[in-house]
Structures are given as structure tokens and as C-alpha cells.
Length: 258
Ligand SMILES: O=C(O)[C@@H](O)C(=O)CO
Ligand SMILES: [Mg+2]
Image (cartoon, rainbow, N blue to C red; front, side, top):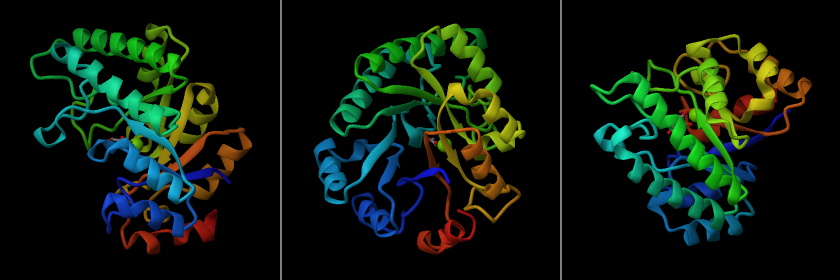
């Protein structure tokens, strides 16, 4: 079975972020991820991780002004300085929290922005971060996100990601493969994972449709997890779904299929 982690930004939201570490530990999770940890000082998060003997395995770099509609700014030509400042903050948090993976969100292509310029900006920002993360011993990731949930999101399928990696030309960049987004955008999950495992650094999942826990939609997670084992995937696989019931109740699939 995969090495599971739980996303504390989407699960255990019944309680404030500071209490989710304990809630996750009570359900047996020793690995956690947080999309945007910046609302808490890194020292506070470190205390919580140590208290609950947990490892933070992933955080996102700041993604602009989420409430104003930003979903990342790495492809925004006019915000390169802001993006790089955010990347530095992400590395500072990751360093302090001993977190070995940072995810960069490309963002939505800005209105009236030439697509080629957005692509060029994203490539340059990924190259810059790949190098900065490399120096800090951190794996840089970027995630493809479906365009139903986020219309206009620049990076939205695996083929596009792998072509971009060629253009970036740095070894320290891998795909954060989110099974939920990829089922919506391209399907063919197991074959894509198997063929590209060497370029995939982290996996997340939710069922489709609805983005809820396994067994609520169309995906056969029992087969997917078995295939990941069979292909030798040794990374972490994270629960990143909106529970359709309470978080604790939503975990019943773990006993049934995992
Ligand atoms: O899939 C997602 O939505 C996340 O992994 C994420 O980081 C966007 O904030
Ligand atoms: Mg995801």
C-alpha cells in the first residue's frame, strides 16, 4: 500500500489548523501536508509537528492573493519579483520545518497576456526555483490542475508539464500528479503514472466527480494503489479531498481497500 499523508488544508477542517495535527495523529497519520502554512509562524508549526511526531512532506509557495482570485502567479510576467519573494519565503519555511518538497502553482493566464509570454515566464520562474531549491536540498514540484475547477489555469495536463520540464532544463523539477485533476483532464491514470514515474515527485488523490474520498465516485482506488506498488512508486501519496461526511467517517475506505 502507498505511504499515505494527509492534507491538513482539506481534511480535518472541522477544527482550526493548529488542532488538525492532533486530529490527524489520532487517526494514525505521521505525514502531513499544508497548502499554505504562512498564517502560522514556522516555529509554531515546528512545535506542533514535534509534539505529534509528524513530518511535513509538502507545502506550496505563496500563490498571490487567493481571495482576489489568484491561483498562483508563476506565469504572470508582471509579478516576477513578488513570485520570487514568495519562493524565498517557501524555502525558509521548508528549511525550518524540514519539509523536502515545495509545490509551485503556475496560476491562471492573466487577461490580455500573450500565452507565449506566460509560458516563458513560468519556465524562467521554475528554472530559478529549481536552482534555489536544489541549493537548499528541496525537491521542486509543480502541479497540473483541471480547468473545470480553475478555468484558465496555465498548467493543466501531464504532457504539457513534461514538455515544460525539458524547456526548464534543470533536474530538480518534478510533477505533483494529482489523480483527481488528471482524471478530469486526461484519464489513463495508471498508464501515465507507469510511463512517467521518474518525472513524478508526489501524488495526491480524490475521487471524481465531487472531489470526495475514495468510493464516492468513478475511480477504482484499490487498483490504482496496487498499480503504484507494482510499478515501485516509493514517494508519498496524499489524501487531498473534501470529505463528504466528517473527516473521521470519510476514512472508512482505508480499512476496506488499503
Ligand atoms: O490540488 C490542489 O488543489 C492542491 O494540491 C493545491 O495545492 C492548490 O492549492
Ligand atoms: Mg492537489
